[in-house]
Image 1 (cartoon, one colour):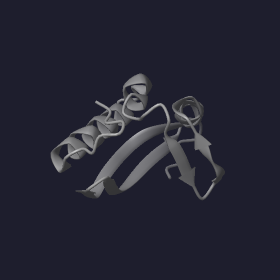
Image 2 (cartoon, helix red, strand yellow):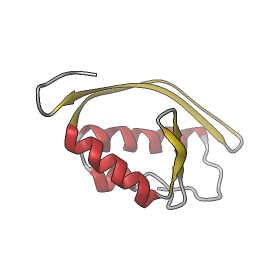
Image 3 (cartoon, helix red, strand yellow):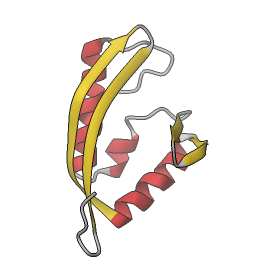
Length: 102
């Protein structure tokens, strides 16, 4: 379920985030990527300029998944207010070669 220009309710935002978390943990990349809009913009301290579009994000996700396997995805808070959804979470991954956890 993607919301495009619509504003999700808090319940819908929680459900979408749960789907995202569960798909990531079971390494279901198509289901994980389906949680994001085609026109997403992904920014982080190591992606400057930000990645634009789900296809670019999919390449990042596939590369990360090839190198690391998910261990945990803990959601600490999720708030929806008007058109803003803010989530705070911690993930743990393990290197497929060597087993180092991050």
